[in-house]
Length: 195
Image 1 (cartoon, rainbow, N blue to C red):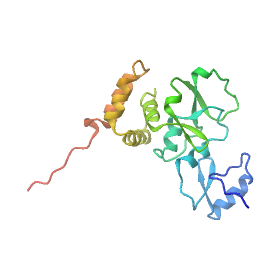
Image 2 (tube, rainbow, N blue to C red):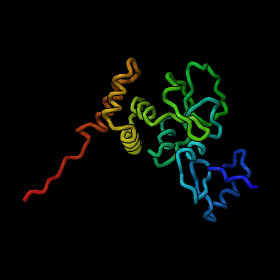
Image 3 (cartoon, rainbow, N blue to C red):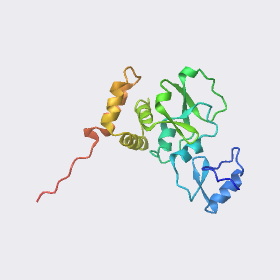
């Protein structure tokens, strides 16, 4: 009995070479999904997006930040290079050949989930990490943050999680950024028809 077509196809260790995958895309059988290819007749679930970024992911690492936002459907395009995080308590040695930007984080297990065979930070952890990031997000980043916050249950819940976190680096920055993105000042004014 023939096997099922995998969720994503890639030239890295796959059965088809890059030119064959590109030809199948030109024929309309596949479409690009990050650096991989995906059958056009299958829906793009988060597990497929995670699998597209998984090649080269260090063992025990989880996709995070913009990569996780893309996996959760909050970003339009996959980041290049993808970002990942590992548990600081593991004291693992990261391979220099990885195509992922990898950082060490605390409280790793509480903020990750398994999508298919790939670890990814949860939408809440992704939102908290992006809110605390040192760089101010661009328009696409702000839209991704709003989508993630909405998916997590709204700004009140995210604000509550930040405040309950105790000592957390860049907590004040995250609270200010959340207020700018989702607070009352960021909402459009109500328009009212009066005659």
